[in-house]
Length: 164
Image 1: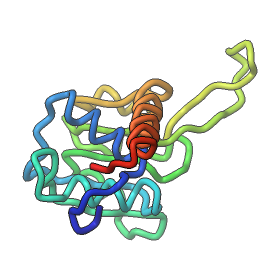
Image 2: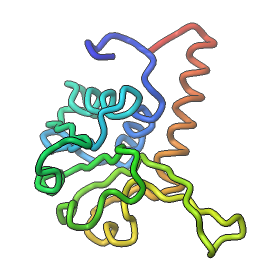
Image 3: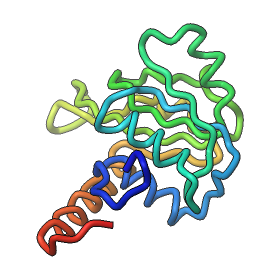
Image 4: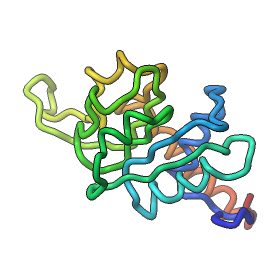
């Protein structure tokens, strides 16, 4: 994947790219900030979104827990991909007006408002951030289902002994 050869792509980054593709978003030349540097999501999505492809060509900055001036960097992002693994880490003051926000996180937190006693939230504080965004993925129901689709696609390709 890193050098552009056919390969299986990690399911979550592949799902994110499918979201971008089917939403019709133009990301060429845009600044994308990826919060999180994991080998499963952060690094692969940074490679995919910056690759010289029809769905790529974005300029990417990878940030993490030790990044200095994090808010200043995230406020520059046209596209913010939150995969930092901390519930509601991204707040409204970290997001540029009109940004595209893709929330990869999923966390189960206690809630007295649900029958189960829990609710799911992401890495983005959705209620305060959504009003600033041109697009934002919900949790649950955003990246998660696309990850499942990508996993099934990889499974099918593996069963056929093919890669793309």
